[in-house]
Image 1: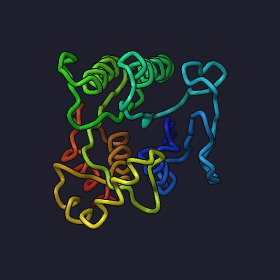
Image 2: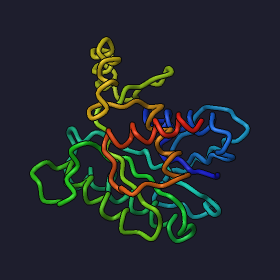
Image 3: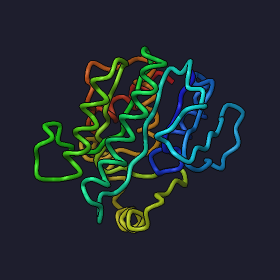
Length: 223
């Protein structure tokens, strides 16, 4: 299986990349981003592009799955600016890939509390909901993942400083939180769940933390 990851340098993307590189069924990993991953692996190919809205010249044909892990905090951002990064970019990338690989699996990382009605009071939830709806309407196997708390594992860290402070503060509680599948998952479970989706699909197209952990458990059971 050939996969592409957007956002492989972020916390979620690092976890997904790690699991893809470990899984022998994933034969090639294309990372597309504004910076290289900094990793070296026989099946990893880094493609650095200055503008992710412009993928002209990047060969995205023959891909079986896309794991879209790009995301930013909405703190301090206007709705227009947040929508540009969260909605416009996701829809642009998804539309480009759908035109070339209509049978591929596309997994969009959203978040718990996302508002699929697009009419709620919370700005980030409305925008995420709009992005989910647009991606799921495209002609491929689209899924939206809505993780709640994500525990970074295997040395992975967030690039956002205040996220890192939160993770440090709750680290002693992490083992307990991971026993509550409704409220928490981890970077490795997310990656495993995405691979499981790409290989076997799911009857649910919007997946909460409980669903993500169940997919990861099915992945581990089949390993």
